[in-house]
Image (cartoon, rainbow, N blue to C red):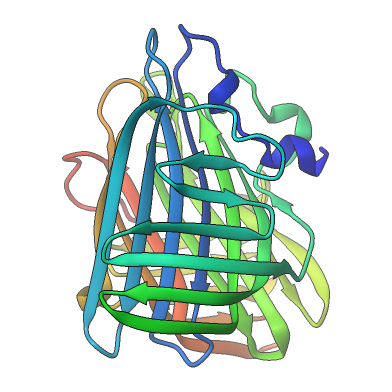
Length: 316
């Protein structure tokens, strides 16, 4: 699949009677650990209504023990952002290589350089934009190097070579449950990007499925896939931590900081939305099959999503 097809916005072009959600997002984290910025521009379209845009901005400040979150939804229908942009509404813009915007008391002006090629989550390009699966996603830039400035409640963060990522997801409905784990700037320039999901198939909910990739020593490797469950795939999920064992001895352990975890409500194109918890300054370790461990404190993203009002996070 071409990059153009992976990153282009769907919301401005969807038929009036069709449902859709869509997000373009960027996350950057201080290489020293403890501070991160998450910016997300989303579109939500219910059948029979135009898509409406929402801008989200979250600054995670672990040394200060706080998260500053802002979001705003705009009444104007989402329009085609034009060449050089993926999403543009509410005075905020996100596109190839840059993001700018402001939601007082937060403001951001970022540029980034891709360190590697996109990483699609679905195993084949023929699965994208189909009735099933209902959710599509791609790490457009699984490892980026970002620069710029962020204003956080009067304080100025200078972003100088902060590792990060840029992503895009869209579809007619969210996964029933999901976990997203990401880290860039691991020792040696390694990165890992992993999505776990349980999806609805009629009245049933699937077991956990894994998809993603990692790059270590300049070599990329796909993670998960349809045969992973037959080759040692094991998952333990809790609201503030995860332990994921993947084939060939790969293990990912991540733990969020409750004081720097934000709760989000993700609306859905129809039916109930999702309750989401995200810590973008989590601690984590990637263990490789050869026994090496790559650790990073305060720089991992760890997100858990589940149906609104579902109670405890499902474990396995």
